[in-house]
Length: 393
Image (cartoon, rainbow, N blue to C red; front, side, top):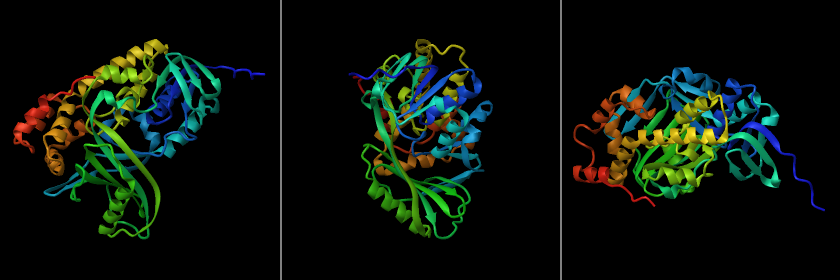
């Protein structure tokens, strides 16, 4: 005899995917619209995965900082960059969020009935989510934040990395983050080391590449992290955590088909909806903006949410045209071993311009300044890269 189907769950808003984008939406809506029933669904047992997210204070509008402030676990008054012919300290406050903190805040701010973990999603539509075991969630609206859709619709280079949190035998003397240390030997495109000092005797070291391929060899990258730490005189007692990632650096593409490839007409946020910085691949600033925007809506109808988020995705895509041109110059005009020169030149510009660039809010004057002067790549190749477009599939 067949067992009865589970009783459907009813809610006002179902958020599919409990990573950064989905978690921020849940926290924002729970605060702004406490009368609504939210359901947040994550296939793993914990929200947020295994991640460390960092951002500049200038990435977040002052009126939105109430959302990020409770998540911050570390902060510094500035950061450093190092290149073969240029080093610099920049006084822009820098923050870090750990995924464990996101998980804790979600469990602390939302009722247990709103949090579903360890369940796989079988289907989504604007008002319905079907889980394993035929569990149905009937919602006023659904937002899909499960990460990437089909990258075949995008023309990408890749930012790939392995990061390790190292427990040291003795305290280090690093006072502020090193956002880019490109004095290291260049392999596989533009390579740099990213360093965050966590306490007196813990340090997070990430080996990062802007590469033509998404292939990642964790073992080799871990060896290079160990070599970097040894070169700094840091005696590593053990590795406390490790994360790896491969992120798109988008040069061109077909947003319409990318959007459709990730659950069709259902509203999307995060990487699922192409909400990330074209150059840095960072998604936190856009995740905050979208979470606030969604929490301010009065109507959570699924079709309406899809239209709103699709429009925002198009506006975000259009706003990224300049950054995608820069990506084509970086990947197609610069020789892989010479790519660091593009960033070395960039970090000679004014701090305000750099801040706006990371926030994805470069002004017309910023764009003109970035492109002015002698380019750090061959002019002919630069012009060819700027005008080159990949044919849409």
